[in-house]
Length: 600
Ligand code: SF4
Image (cartoon, rainbow, N blue to C red):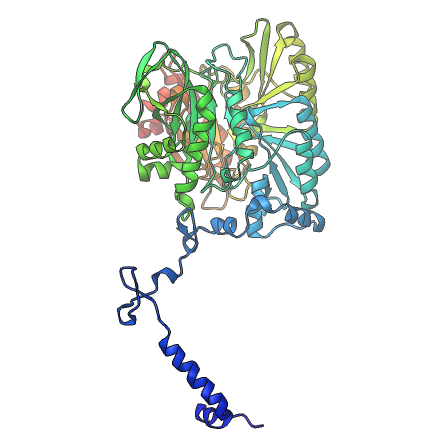
């Protein structure tokens, strides 16, 4: 049979008379079928002439919290295409094949705290979650074993009072993850667009000045997050801190959300959002602070809310949900809470939060609360009496936050033998051993020296912190940790007599993980024109009672020149400052040009 291309040929030659009769009937029935259309106003009509468009059938683009898929930022697409919480099988497959993930899965693996840190190291880093920075000697010993068996044999204490173990192959990822869980720890949600380690005043529970032990709230929020899938996959990362009001802070105003303990000395009447008024008894409460992100030049600000401590976890969860549902998912640079607060104004954010709460948060002007006691700068170092009579906590400086496996085991053992087997990590990248009987302090001090720790860090060297830097972070322009250690060695002896403690923050890129803008002296890593490593130098930043963003003093200083420059800045401060004047006060009361003059 030959094929034909014309319809006429088909109709005339291909159908029998019976078939033609059937087709004629079928077409006539179609013509009688009632058609329903839709007018431009969306009403249904039987009059085809009045139909405009079938709006009900118009394709609607899927959205993520109102953002069309086509507008999502790339990581948001990855999260939409495969929920990173559901990739356990993929982790097993990568471990089995000893294979590094592709770009999208590199992002997803961070939901498990796993960071493929190429090209700086072709290996994984695991970031943990250690709420309130509190861990046991057994846990630290176990982490030392994991670091030694699978990784580089060391760990870093981070600026979120957390630990990272580094340099392990893909084949070890599941062994490390399950090993961490066997120790009663987790890394779930420690990276990517999730709520980071919940921090708290590191002396909570034994601080002589504290208003309230904030550990239960940090742990409470930690566990709530871990058990709520919708609190993962936020528009960007989110930091939460609890400040006890004690002698050391939690660097609280650097967080997206902070609960700052305060004392209300006298009963007052407060107003609710509906205009009602309510008597509030004197007592200890939390003030809620919002929107800190010092890398973008902002500290958290008081929201006006005063809440009971037992309401804190609920308020945190409600605020995080409001952020998750309304934060910017199109532009990663504008995806932090600060930008939602700027877009909406804090009042709308608070109103949306209040809708999610079964209780009415109260508004109390901050002036009604007692002022926070000044923090003890460098109170995280050395020997300090506790609230419990006869006991002390011992703060140990760790150069740039690095701990060898042997030191981890040694510290675990010392905490068990001299304390109660507990340790605390701080956002200053050091570590405390609490509950040490006063009579045991000299022996502990002696044993710490054997482990290469020094309890007598100078006021110039004791407050040096450094982000990971270019040995472990692809964003870094400089080897921050090595430069920090070199600076500490320089200042330790040469400026041992500095009259006031200073904080010096090294950060390798504008992400500002080490918060260079809040250091007395801040160093922001930069590649210099000749390809060498260097820093932009800022001065006069501070936190807590010294809160302020540092100003740029010098640009593009060679890394090799940083120790001598910092020494010169601090020496000139000593020579020129008024009696008892702090460095930050001295730096702030001069114009930048005047500071430059006195340094040349
Ligand atoms: Fe990496 Fe930049 Fe953070 Fe340093 S500040 S750890 S370089 S992202």
